[in-house]
Amino acid sequence: MFKGNEILETIHMIAQENLDIRTVTMGISLRDCASDSAETARRKIYDKICRYAENLVKTGEEIERDFGIPIINKRISVTPVALVAESSEADNYSIFARTLDDAAKNVGVNFIGGFSALVHKGYTKGDHILIRSIPEALSTTERVCASVNLATTKSGINMDAVREMGYTIKDCSERTKDDGAVACSKLVVFANAPEDNPFMAGAFHGIGEPECVINVGVSGPGVVASAIKSLKGADFGTIAETIKKTAFKITRVGQLVAQEASSRLKVPFGIVDLSLAPTPAVGDSVAHILEAMGLEKCGTHGTTAALALLNDAVKKGGIMASSYVGGLSGAFIPVSEDAGMIDAVVCGALSIEKLEAMTCVCSVGLDMIAVPGDTPASTLSAIIADEAAIGVANNKTTAVRIIPVPGMREGDVVEYGGLFGRAPIMKVNPFSSEAFIQRGGRIPAPLQSLRN
Amino acid sequence: MKGVITVLGCDKVGIIASITGILAGTNVNILDISQTIMQNIFSMTMIVDLSKIKVEFSDLSEQLKKVGEELGVEVRLQREEIFTSMHRI
Image (cartoon, rainbow over all chains, first blue to last red; front, side, top):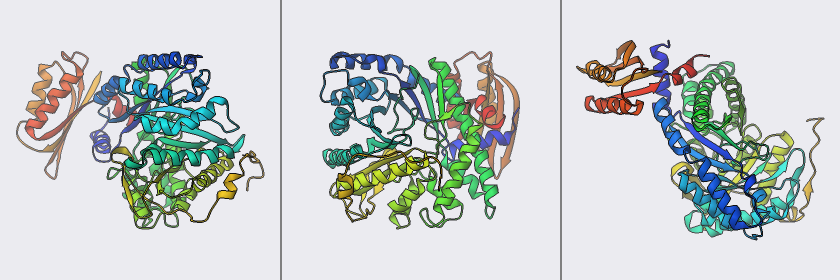
C-alpha cells in the first residue's frame, strides 16, 4: 500500500504542475487503400479511418476519468499519403487531404498527420504531386498536418527538396495570410523523421509500422521545473538524478495510459515518446526548467549545456519506465508554445542562431518560429538546410516548422491561441543564401567515423 | 479493483460523514483511511475496494464530485494503478 504523501505528490503533479498525457495517437496503415481511382482510394481511406478510430476519443475520455489524468489530445497518424495516392490518376492530392479532414472530424480527433512524403534520396511521381498540393491542402483543411522528410544520415540531404520546401512554406503563408499564416504551423520539414512519432504536426505512420498501433506522448515540464526549483545550490549530479526520478514517474503514467488504451481498443501498443512537451500555460515551460538551473533567461550562455543535461536525464529516467520507447523522445523547444521561450525572445535573450545550437542536443529542431513575412524562400530553405545538416551529421531527428507571417516585422507578435500560443517575430540574417540554394542536387551522406 | 479517494480543502464538520455515506450507499468498502490538517488545509486519502460496487465507476465519481462541490472541497476518485505505477517498480 502506498503512503499518503505519495498519493498527494501525484495529485499535486496533476493539479498544480500540469502533468498530463499530451497525446494518445492511433497510427493507421492506409497501404491497402491504394487504388487506380482516386475516388475509390478516398472512400477506402475514409471508411478505414472511421472504422479503426471509431472509439478512440471515447476510450481516451474513459481512461482520463478512471485514472484522473488529463489526456489533452487524441489524434491519428496515417501512412504518408504520397505512398497511397500515387497509384491513382489524381494530379492534385488536396482532395485526399479533405478526405482525411472529414474522417478526423467524423471521429472527433483534433489533428490527423500523414499528408507526407519521404524524399530524402529523391522524388517519385506521387512525392512531386503531394508536395505541390501541400499549400492548397493545408489552407483548405482544418485538422490535416503535413510533413516532408528530406534528409537522412544514410542518404544525405536532398537539396532540390530543400529548395522546393522554401517556396512551399511561402505559398502556405500567403494562402493563409489573414490567419497569421496558420497553414505553416501544420507543416514540418524533417531530417531523420521517426516512423512512430505521436506528436503533431510531424506524425505519420511509417512504412515499417503494423496495421494499427497506439503511441503515447507524455508531458510534464512543470513537474520537472518545480523539482529543480526545490534544489537551490545543488550540483549538477543532484539535478540530473532529480530529473531522472521525475521523468521516471511521468513516463510510468504514460506507460499505464498506453497499455490501457491498447487493451481497451484492442490495438497493439507501439511506443511511449519521452519528449517533454511544453504548452503556453503558466508553469508548463521547458525554458523555465533551464532558468530554474540558474540561467537568468533561456538563450543566454549556458543554455545549450543545461538543455543537454535535461534531455539526457529525461531519457535515462524514462527509458526504464516504459517497455518500448520511441518517437522523438527529447525536450521540445517550440517558441510559440512555451511561455518562457516567448519571454526570452521578446527580451532579446533568445535568437534563431541560439535555438539552432540548442537543437544539436535535443529534439526536435526549429519549431514554431515566426519570422518576417518578407523573408525570401531561399532563406527559409537555407534555414532548413542548416537544421537538416545538424540532424544528418549527428544521426538524430531535426525538423523545421517556420512561419513567415505576411505583413509582420521583427518585434511584432502573432496570436494563434490554444496549444499553438503566440509567436514573436524573430530576426533572420539579412544576407542572401540564394545562389547556394539554387544549386540543387544532393549533399552526400556524411562519414560515420572519425567523428570530430 | 481498488480506488483512491482524495479530499483537499478547508476543514469543516461532516466531510468524512458525507463521503462515507455515499460509499456505504454504493457498496464500496473502505480499506484504509488517513487524514491530516496542515495550515487549515484538510487532506484525506482513502483506499477503497470497488469490486462489489453497485453503480458505474463514473456514477460514483460524479456523486463524490458533487458532494465535494457542496462542501467546498475537491474530491477525486482515481483507480489505484496510477499511484502504483508512479511510485512502485
